[in-house]
Length: 460
Image (cartoon, rainbow, N blue to C red; front, side, top):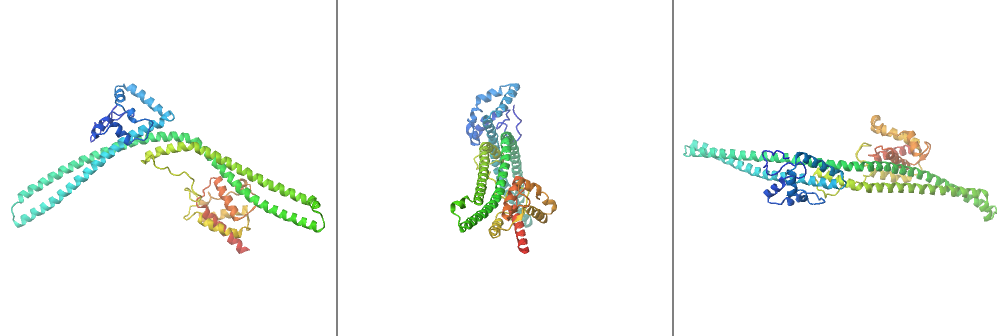
């Protein structure tokens, strides 16, 4: 079934198909002095087989003899090809290549016509200059009473006629450019429709994988938060074990001074209890640390496997997104590596200059204040007060912490004491688990911690 050709475009150049097959491809190729296969391949995305195998003369002749009912049936069969894995991508690429062929051709023709218009404009400009000079000569001749004015006036009329002819020719060329542009837009719409159809299919494939990755990412964030909290607790336990070890050594020294033998010292009940307690505590720390490490490794392995399954579909989706954007299919894909903390877009502690530079400055000073500690509940209350002061109550309300939720999620008692750096690490993990914004986090947390450190020094 053929579409009506636009008035300014040669009707021999193209015809609208029901399917990919267009009888006009061969005719247009003859006009340009190229083969059909050569024209298609110049703008065709790589496919499983050459487009000429589908656009062959025999196939086009057969299709033109089909009844309307048969053509409709063939069209339905053709659409079914999109439901066959692998085949849908090849068929889609062929259709995209076909439409892109005509987009390129219309743009090429329009470019040639634009060059023609530029030439016509230059010629009109030259005629205008000549007309002005002749007009000036006529006026001078009339003033001075020289002969030849009638012939100059005739020449002036001739220039006006030539200018009108050039302007008419320009209007015709501009109409053809507009028609070419409309045709190119039509084929671009068809191309994008096909690309959208394939993109939506890849979205369907990716949807369960993306959902699984979201769950796994949450699990990883929870594991990292638990690791941060556990390490703080382990560090406190290790300090306690060090104190117990020192008490055991002092007791052994006292017993030696009292004349007890090494055998009796080792068998002394208090010494044995201290050693057993130390062994149990250190074994517990080792066991918990290993369990957390295994959990993180298992989650990361699952994420890697799911990412590997999703990667091909993402690449294929990107391929057709680039088709719509007009970028070449071979262009390098943008990295999907997650942005560093403090740089991701979206809502959050939005202020200029946020980043890790100030964080590094605070951490370098933290070594000198390592033993300064505050309770977890005190940190949460102070952090909420800081946010209200910096942002105002309305904006800060979405960023503020719920004390009960914080203690429940982190498994930290409100009275548990933390160093400023421990709170910073735990708070970052908590915000990630709760899917709260973290943009500008480093700048704000460092300002908050420096404030409470200064206040502590003044009251000391």
